[in-house]
Length: 68
Length: 286
Image (cartoon, rainbow over all chains, first blue to last red; front, top):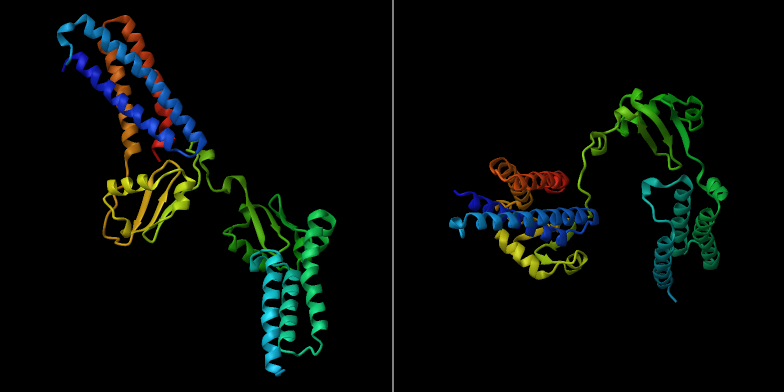
């Protein structure tokens, strides 16, 4: 497995977690828990953006792995 | 008019009068009666019986007595809400039986309680050992309430320093195979949500005895057919595991990469994600 495909895999796991957290933050009725879910969701979405940028730069440096 | 007709008529009227009277009187558990409450209820019951059987020849005498015994407790209740002084006169004062771990013998004597009675009451409060009792008080109803010494109290999550997720009360959404619309609207969920959830679990609505939704939106089902196993939702554990996995991945990327800038970003993200994991732990794992 190439580096870029590993990073992409982690990226997709993170996206899944982000979506689930967002769902929980909407479903939760307890205010405190809702805040916790929302914060976690926001934090993960920041990390996700960083990772996406990284994928972009790896693909730019090593175009032969693009699309993997 | 026949005398049995009179009795029938009186009884029906008195039935409703007493019914509404007791409605307006204090709502309390029978075992929490003060002696005076008990007496007033008994007197009312007796008066009602006597009038309805025609034993009191003049019905107005009976009704007057009933009005006094029925209304006086209500009046006293309201005035004791206004004044602490009246409250103390009516209900008496609670008496401290154990203070700082020492039994107050004088107060026991005032309540005409022997040591044996006292120990028995303590045992009924699950404190078999007098040495564990820090404070005990006899309420005006005659109940004894016990406060244990700090090191003998049951452990709470606060004592252990564990953060637990705060939760609101669960709502019943299915009873006897019927959907409860009120419960669903209280938590802002729809019938469509419920049917998808049931479909995911592979359970027919008719087979559900009780369905309850907790504050995080998880549905718990109890079926009529106890042989059927309801799959327990493990979404939260899965989410926790996948976030943890992402965190580990970020760490390994940080180690693998030779680009210094990327390395620092990876490390920082991994650190942030770890904080998120810590924060979510009480909510996702229980």
